Image (cartoon, rainbow, N blue to C red; front, side, top):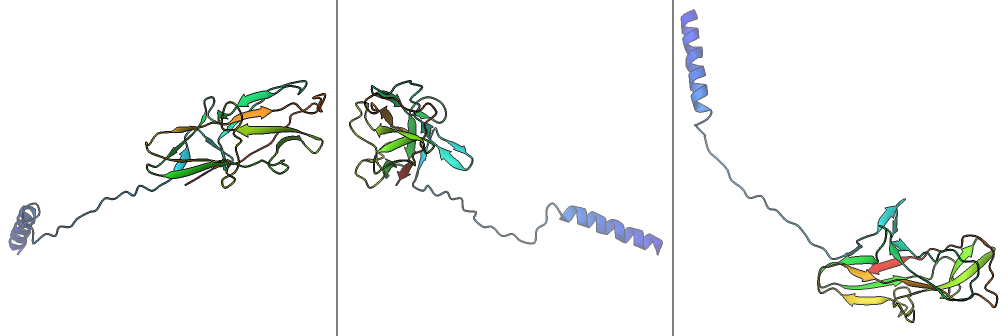
Amino acid sequence: MNRTLRCGLLMATVFAVSVIPEARAGSVSGNIDATITIGTGCSVTNGTLNGGQNQFGSVDFGEHALLVNNIDADAAAATGGGPIQVTCSLALGYAVGIDYGQHATGNQRRMALGVLDSIDYGLFKDPARTQPWGPIGSGSEMLGLIAVATAFDVPVHGRVPPQGVSGIKLPGVYTDTVVMTVAW
């Protein structure tokens, strides 16, 4: 009995080993699909995210004692230097606009020193500072159609015009925040 049991176990083992790699009872085949969807959209290629808020750049007019002449400055991208740039999908119409800011009166942008004082300034699309920026829908936005998938510059040229007869303002840091919107 012992010998019969051993012989049966040995045969079962040999049969199991020889069947596993070679013998198959059947097979089934099927496809696996791979897909990717390219949507349309735009992004600011050299902006940053700061505390959950996009930061595209800044315009720093520097330090001045009197505001009796035009003071010009250009926006620099948030990543340090260079212009603000946008990249959009191919064959996509876009609009870029800049609102009038937190302290504006109508469409006149103002940098404020708290509630004590303010300084008028403007943002323009051209270096001559004749084409003002406005929000989308104002007629002063930048419109275009992407023909080549490459980043394009969003020029922002700032100007602080002379302020009053004497150009004298309270000392301090005057600030404003404008929102740039890219829509497609």
